[in-house]
Length: 252
Length: 224
Image 1 (tube, rainbow over the protein chains, first blue to last red):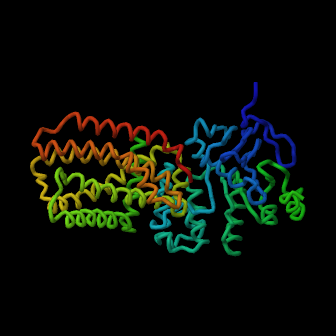
Image 2 (image 1 turned 90 degrees about the vertical axis):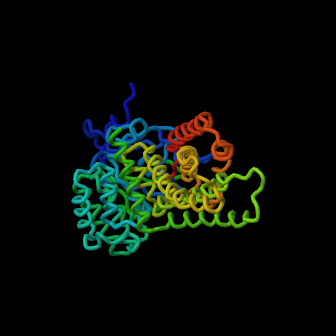
Image 3 (image 1 turned 90 degrees about the horizontal axis):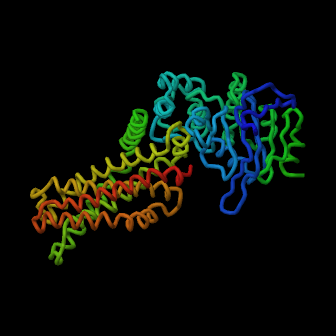
């Protein structure tokens, strides 16, 4: 009998097998095609709980599509996805409850305040005390003093910080981030990097797409390189240096 | 079921709060509806053509105002990618459809409440003869129209043609509702007959079909 993706033994970044770990994210034979164009081909991925994984790749390699598939924002053409043992196709709502997503766009309502946005999303996720949780997260991202200001008055960096709070409002076990540093200034980028490191230390599973190779190798424990929709490399970040990773990304 | 109702309430309240802040939709659609009725009223002041019926003119106003309404309420979800935020929530995506439909219906109700009296004045339409019949027939027609309009607004909102494309897609589908409701109301107001159960039945059947199909396919057409 074939094992389901989540039953596949997740391996640590050092390649040593872990005993009976329920994978945080597991895909099997994942493919995505749009019209006749193949975007992702046969992605087999097992990410153990608590791992921080970076996905690198040239433009058009399929990184953002992979994140969208994992977030259940678009259905796969073939293949399966499990989030902490929950099949995303059969139980999409349960899978989504375990996920948080930070993307290019903030996924916020510009006419609502930061606090109203977080309370609204907190209620959607059945957070017990959404107001308290929203205030707590605004404090974490350093925006408590601007809690009642509408998001449309925020800078790109501030909006991104509210977006991070939105992604964490239901305390998801798995955090997906699609180029979360895009458009941020150096200070905001450093702040977000610290926050991701803290979340990783607290045991969150993090899967992020990033274009800054040096930063990616610094943040993550494992690096996956996509090329033309396939996994070209899947290695411990400590085994890669930025130059080698850049060559891998570009297929040199 | 309770959770679904709570979620729909949450989403509708959010839409109404945003509308109360931005005031982008309601004012605009009411003005458009009034303009249509006024222009047609003044244009027909010289004399109404044979077989003229005021409900058809009201439908013109409802249709154009409705399309603008559907487009605007969905545009709120496209701004900053908020729709993806809703799609990520642990709920059936049909909830997003039903809540958007409810918000659109509330806005269209407000439009009808303002535009209809103006149309009545312009066209000398004696609504007092059978206000209940008018409300039932027009209400049923608007529910079906909003059902398809909400679905297609989600479909076309990510395209550049949004507004024009939405009208081109929704108007032909809404035609059976317009024809049925106009004929049914002509029977009541012009010919003085009782409200025809057959006409209302056809409208309700269209509503049920449009609502069911739209709710079922909404998840498939939704793109973040």
